[in-house]
Amino acid sequence: MINIFGYNKTPVFLAGVLFFLFLQANIYGQSTATVDNDLVSHKFALFDANGRPFVNPYRDIAGTPFFTDSWEYGIIITDDNSVFGNMQFRLDLKDQQVHFRKPDNTELVIQSGAVKQITLFDSSGKTPATYVFQCGFPSIDNQNEKSFYQMLADGKIKFLKSLRKSIHEEKDGFSGEVHREFRQYEDYYFLVKKNIERIKRDRDYVLAYMTDKNPQIDAYLQKNKISFKSMDDIKKLVDYYNSL
Image 1 (cartoon, rainbow, N blue to C red):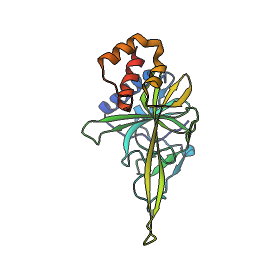
Image 2 (image 1 turned 90 degrees about the vertical axis):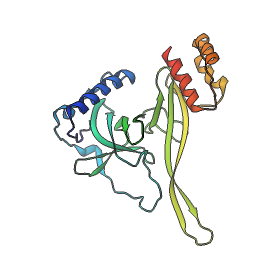
Image 3 (image 1 turned 180 degrees about the vertical axis):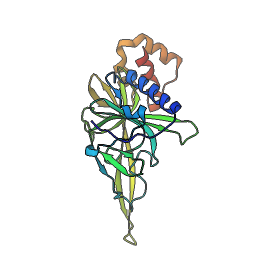
Image 4 (image 1 turned 45 degrees about the vertical axis):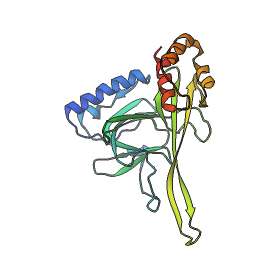
């Protein structure tokens, strides 16, 4: 179990976090999750056996290894279903690890596998956004059970987005100077009954997962224009199927 610092926030904020946790417990099946007392009592406690200080090795590399370079408030669920929130996190897409910031601004890295879900609240845009990432899925392609996936849809069909970053090097043919930058790669997957498979942007492929609801799906497709080349449209269809 990981115990990490909480942040002193207003009762309104805490009430919102607790309500969100209740929703998450129902949506993602975390019925055994419990809220750590530090979230309510504002007590600071740190047992960093599962964490290590972060020393940035990427100063000469353009871009960032993180999902968002800025710190976002969020909630994590650990491998033993303990819940910790009201803290600032960021997700390293290169090493697939969660970082958190202590009140003294020290940055710590939580060891791989210790966090199975992270929810980030991004308020930087015009419309606030919530991103949920989970790991623990079967290995496929370049991902293993410690790799995080963004949860695009949940239900009988889990719609997963794999986000990874790696360092790309390019050498100038004239000066010999080497330019290094982070590049992001993404792939999409369906997870059904613990079987994971990379998605094909094909009508027959997608609909083969929904044959048990053929009449409803056919009616939906007649009323809605769906492009099976668009992941946004596939998400809409999966969300509808999961609602049936």
